[in-house]
Image 1 (cartoon, one colour):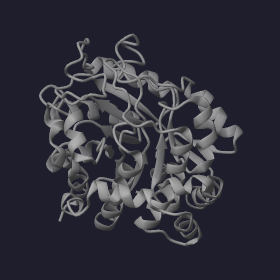
Image 2: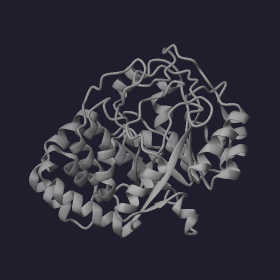
Image 3: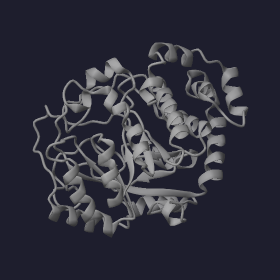
Image 4: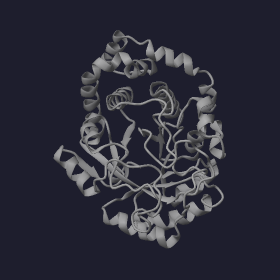
Length: 371
């Protein structure tokens, strides 16, 4: 059985209605229980939970301290290519955007590595557009051979691959794969992905299953907030997470919280997610699942990131560039989206230290002998 079979048993409109019908009593019950299920998660992300945000924040902080201590993992994205064969309504790399395309050469990759290592990083996230012909498995193999000697933890956020392709990359240093469904609303998914391999909803939906079977160390899930109702999309993400944890129990998991940001050919969000609502969601995930890692990128503002550190976040990026060669080779090339928090890694580390946290520059599992 794969997740797509479970997914077919749920109706978007029915789930949305159930979330919005949750009561204050449902929220209080969810907060008071020692362990929570998906019904409790619905209550915690519902409008009825808004008045309980302070209680949720305190509980989320307590649970995060208990599991992760006062450490925050630091990572940085390195964009290898902005070539893309997909049309996606929300992305600056979309095929229909007439922009200069660029894929880093081996020499340029080495130059980027030098600049990123100088910032102190030992955990890197490799990102590309989705161009299977030019930036496919063979390109990734070459990139991993160049990058692996310099970093103890390599994450990947590229087009979904077949199981055997992941299996070939794991021995080269692949530790984590992030694959965002963007939205679990199947009809709206088609509207936002009209052309390219990414238009195959089911293939993307089953990517975490392929990763689990390949034996990947960590899988990252998420949706793009702004495409559809964030509460309903978050329920389906939690459903997906619960399924994966039960089936691939040796694998670790993370959740990211990307909100739609300005980009070339920009899309106006269908649904606005307020800062308060994002805080509610972060706390809801932590209360629902004490083990999952929660990540926040430089899409968010300085003030917001500083304030939510204590509420459940376990990893953040800093000093990010969202264009290929952005650190050393082509700082002027087009970004995938605009970042908000422009502070350097050193400034972020200082902020964390001021708040009593230890910035961890490499994967803590390996740092403490855990895998």
